[in-house]
Length: 333
Ligand SMILES: NC(=O)c1ccc[n+]([C@@H]2O[C@H](COP(=O)([O-])OP(=O)(O)OC[C@H]3O[C@@H](n4cnc5c(N)ncnc54)[C@H](O)[C@@H]3O)[C@@H](O)[C@H]2O)c1
Image 1: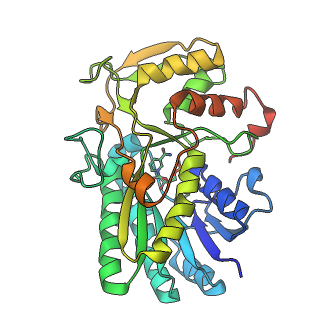
Image 2: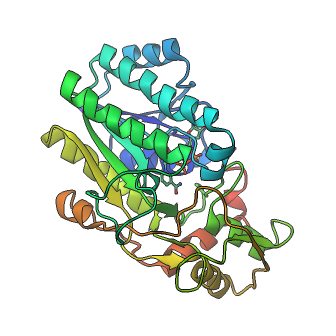
């Protein structure tokens, strides 16, 4: 009999790709989110509209299905917003996850894959960053994610919950058919913003936050990893946690840093269109450089990214962009 997986944040950018990867592997998927699913997931999962802050609703979902494991992607993700309004992040990340874990405990569900982030490390002391690097997050977003990782450790020791925290660096890219495009509300991610500005779908110049970082060209350096590769890592992590009890953590990144300027140039090269740029001050809570050492995920999970370079990631995002294909429009709410 196929396993049944619950995916929280199923309507989101990464969650929708995880649903798709699980369904494509033949698993039964229950997708939970407080906003409707994108059309690109039609027929791929059973949708449960629910808020993780609604504990009784969560308990009903877990009582109604025999869940093998949970992939927990629901949460808030914007660093700047977390600095301006941390309460939202303590609610939707920390309180929501505490609800989920106690409902799982009540229902006897003992496996979880958690969407963590490079933001748990804070300002890196070494680059690339291995999992053994100290975790000293410098913004409320990172602090909520780190607190959840620690909660997962405590729940393993006390209650036998087995988990893998996947510390994503910068998720980007799209699948070829354009049905699940990246579209956060509000959009704060670099590649979709550049594609929107370059294609004229977003008015005004692109705002470049910070040109005085201690990096080669003064702009912030990040490690971009394709969303399809992140989804595949969830499958590998589910297999791993089935055989290896514990509370594990793995970086998901390419191991290569790209500055904002490099990404702008790559977007211009891929689209053939110039992007008008306006330099502005640094954003609160943004470290200068975040680059993963992804070797543990490759070695231990057997994870091999299919999109190892920035250009192929940007090209996939552009191929699926609404300026190129009308299918992407309306795919997200
Ligand atoms: N996108 C990235 O580059 C990135 C990097 C590191 C970590 N992450 C983590 O990955 C996860 C998914 O990110 P994403 O880019 O797909 O974000 P997203 O905003 O596209 O998706 C998040 C989804 O969670 C849902 N959600 C939020 N709070 C909820 C609640 N209380 N109850 C029910 N649903 C709720 C939202 O409705 C949304 O559909 C997040 O946890 C994020 O912190 C993302």
